Length: 499
Image 1 (cartoon, rainbow, N blue to C red):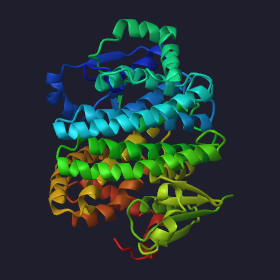
Image 2 (cartoon, one colour):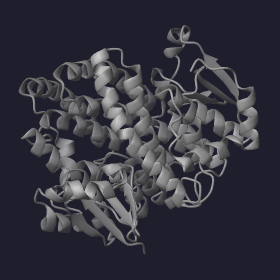
Image 3 (tube, rainbow, N blue to C red):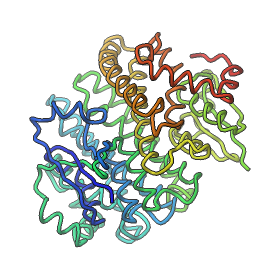
Image 4 (spheres, helix red, strand yellow):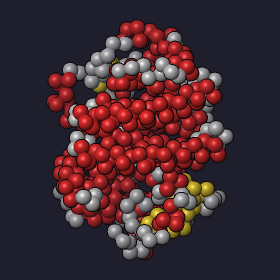
């Protein structure tokens, strides 16, 4: 049995669902709750400087959703099949959308902005809760499949924190959600945990045999696999990943809006967010309707993306390396408006498999990586790969936000943030590759190596410089990956890109 340590601030918040899962599963863990005054000295020791962190046999993993998904797999709460796994992931990410909306208001320091956010939150939260309440009613008192899953534990585990931030009982008007709370809190193991640990002022970190893991989606995916909640085949798993990543897209937009301190920039982010939100919800609604009330259920491949590297190049790299023939459709920016309405969520890259469209670059990449044995030797390595991929996208996102910003003042502010984070991430990646014998994970080639090699062109364009120039391990890794026979052949014949 691995040894686990969960590390978090002395609050419930993101850690409590993890504690619920440990308690339900009967898995012993060390619940380390550090003093807030100690955080500055602890932060550099955490993957990407954030918590909750789960140590598994001494190895650190972050991201609360990933951790929860991992534990759910261990105790059979990750769904009966891939379809249920997808529904659970979707529901969990929706719950976190609610949390991000409430947190945006609660943590705002500017009173004018705080009042504006409160108004928005009081519109958004009931919208979500009504639908979550209906979902529980439809599924016999639970979120998914008529039985207890980790989605139920995440919702109830976060409730105290959500109520604390809103200064009210947010489920008071929703009978099905209230009954779900009662159901979960009456589970013997969880009831016992609550009686001992319910006061606000706790911390979450997960350790597996003392080893820490980071990135919530990575850990969650790991757990879902353990609990058979990750689809019945790789195609369904890819659909689940795509849906989860889409939910994460909207959560990130809400979180970015929430944490912004500049009132003018905050208002701009709010406008962007509330333009995106209805479109996402409409697409999710249509997806569930199409799939019989759930999110998910010799092939030809077609990749649709712009004639740039960006998010599409890693997919092209993987398909080429794995020897999968594909039609490489490269759209022009002028033609994009007429294609946008015909692809999921109105965004690319999109991979068509036998005419069926799949979106979200990480979901697609993970699917191909599994086909090419580039997704680790076991669930632990897969979780490490996921965490690394998500961390790469963290830094890509901040650089992209800076580069594409049109307003000079906002652009300068975003640039300052991006160029503070970049050396930190590069140093972490350099150390990781050095530790793992020239690769990101497990001392062997994985999806993470392909992603970094593919991002090289885009990051070089944004930075107008080689991002790896001061990091020899990363530089050698990119050269090694790009020298692989199939990939080298693709690079030599690929079209000249716009960027």
